[in-house]
Image (cartoon, rainbow over all chains, first blue to last red; front, side, top):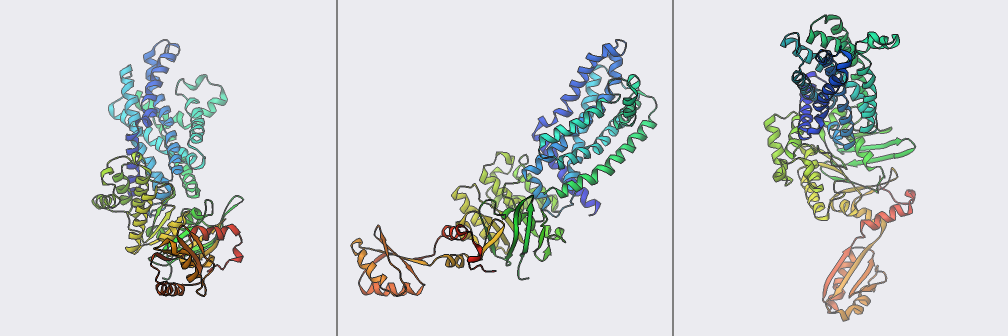
Length: 255
Length: 318
C-alpha cells in the first residue's frame, strides 16, 4: 500500500469526520468548555492555597498542565466515535472499498488535528483572559501547542485500539478515561511532584504526561526544555510503534 | 468466465453457532442470484465473506475470478455492497456521502461531484441532496445506500436484504433499480426473506436454511419440484360452473376440481392440458372471463422445503 494513496484516502475520511464534528457541535465540548471549566475551577480552588496565596502565580503554573491534561482527555472521543461507527455499519462500506486498509483509522486521527487546535486556542486564549502571560515569545507558545497536538495524535492510537476492541462506545469511554486519569493526575499537572511519596515519584518520572507538561512549561514559561522534549518525543515514537500496529490488527480482525 | 460469483463449501462458525455449514453459490455474468432464507439462515454471513469483510473458516470463493481470501484488493475493485442496515453516514448530506465514496475511489473532485449528482438524480434524491442523511426516511436512506454502492460502477453488486422494512411501493421501485442494473450488465447477488422478491428478480435461487443450501434452481424449476400447476377457469355465465368442472376434469392428466366463487381450479400435469381445455370449452360453447395456468407461490415452495427440514429427501440441483 503506497503512502500517497494512504494519505489521500485518509484526508478524504478526515474531512468526513470534520463535517460530522461541525454538524454536531456538542462533540466539541471536551475541547472547548472542558479546558475553560478546568482552568477556572482549579485556578480559584487551588490557587489561593498552593502558590502562597497568589492565584496569578498558580495560573502560570497550571495552564501548561491543563493543556496537557485536557488534550489527553481529548483523545477519549476518537475511540468512542470509531466504535460507534463500526456498530452502525459505516465501516463495512469502507472495508468493502478498494482503499488503503488503514485509511479510516488514520483519517479519524488526522481529523482530530482540528479539535486539538481548537483546544489549544481555547485554553491559551481563555488563560489570557484569566491573566496568564507567557514569559517566552509567540513562537514558543505556538511550538508548545504544536507539541501538544503532535503528542495527542500519538496518544490517540491507544484510544483507537480500545475503540476497536471494546464492545460498546460506553465501554470505550470508561476504559480510556480509566487510563487517562492516573496519567493526567499522577504527574505535575496541579502540583510539583517533590512532595509525592517515592513510589509515586517513580511513576511520575516515567509518565509521558510529566514530560509533555514539563516541555510545555519550558516552552511557555522559559527554563530547560531539552530533556523533557526528548522524553516526550521518545514516548510519542513508542506510542506509535506499539499502538498503531495493534490498532490496525484489531481493526482487521473485527468482523 | 462461467461464473462471476462462485463459492464452494463456505463454512463459518461464531462460537458454537454454525452460521455457514458448507454453502455453494454460483452466479453467471449478468444474472441475478437470489439467496433466499429466513432470518439467521446465514445469508448475511455469506455476503460478508464474498465482500471480503469476513474470512471463511473453510471453503473457497471467487468474485470476478479473484479469490476473496488471497486477492481481496482485486475483489474490492469489482464489487458494490449494500448492507442489510443502511450504512450511510447520517451526519453527511446525500451529496457528501456520494462524493466521499467517489473521492475514495480516486475520482477527481469534479468527477466525484458529477457522479454523485447523476446517482442522486437516478434515485430521485436530488431534492434531498443537501440535507443530512439523518433527516431521510427509511426508503430514502436505502436508496442513498444503494447509490453509494454504485459510485464505482461495480460489475458485481451484493444487495443484502435491500427491501427489508420498505413499504410495498418502495419495494417495487427497488426492484426496478435492480432490473436496470442487470440490464446494464451487472451481476447481482440478492439476499432476501421475501419469496415474491426472489421470484420477481432472480434468474436462479439458492435456498439456505441453518447455514446449508437446501435447494438451488430457477424460480420455475423450484416451483415444479414442489408441486404441479393449477388451471383456473371462470365461465362468463356463473350458472355454467358445473359444466366447466365436468368438461375439464375429464381431460387426461387433470385432477379433481374444486369450485369457489364461480371459479373452477384443477391441478394439472402439464402445459398441454391448456390447449385441450380451450378446445373443449369452445366446443361446448362456453365463454370464459379467465383461463390461466399458475405455478405454486414461492411461499408454498419454501414451506415445503424447510417445513420438512430434510434436505436429503429433496431433489436438490447442484
